[in-house]
Image (cartoon, rainbow, N blue to C red):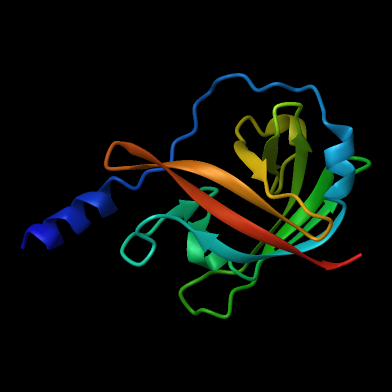
Length: 160
């Protein structure tokens, strides 16, 4: 019974909130150029992923992002993301994005949808880690029962 109560409490505490703090806008152009191309999210990892459901980017269950396709155009910091999960519990979704990498190693993302970038007032700040010529990780912070935990999205390049 205690175990079930713990799981229920953790599930109800899974609310991902982003602060409205300002973000360093000084660009890391060298790192941005290394992200050019098409990528697929091959894994989404976080503590308790077998028991907890996390909504990523205010769009869908984090597991729906596995297999999603992302394109990054480094010379204008635009791109596109497409969710096309084979799971029937996941909805298809596609949207233009804007993004940049700042000098602090943060990946700043806006999902544009049907708006102009300047009309979108909220976005996501993730830590860019494990950058190689063909892969990288984005790490977000989530709140689990009052404790900050990390959720890692692993990107693998699909073509040049």
